Image (tube, rainbow, N blue to C red; front, side):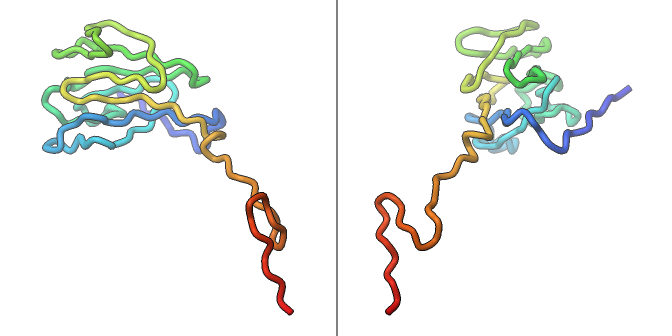
Length: 147
């Protein structure tokens, strides 16, 4: 039995949680800079096409690891699922083990290195104040008047 999750149309948390490949393998299309967006709940990493994060490298197990994102998007738990090569974070090798991770942490799955980033949408969408047309703002010259 396969359970499928419906993606939420809108996200009220104000945060984007993503994994970015920092070191990849161009031969398997696991390019550095490739981004995967994580949903709340379980996010499986592996070669299996049913995983949320599909990596094609032969050094990655079919179901290698998972990241559990809490529903408030404040905690992130990385767990190795008994993979052949383990999951490495820092100097520690996880094998059938789990570890809390945070934004900015990098970990290795097979030969692929991934980085977790949590982006606050409210901060990323801030814009600068622009004065209304015809008014000068700080450091802006006043528009020339037509005579």
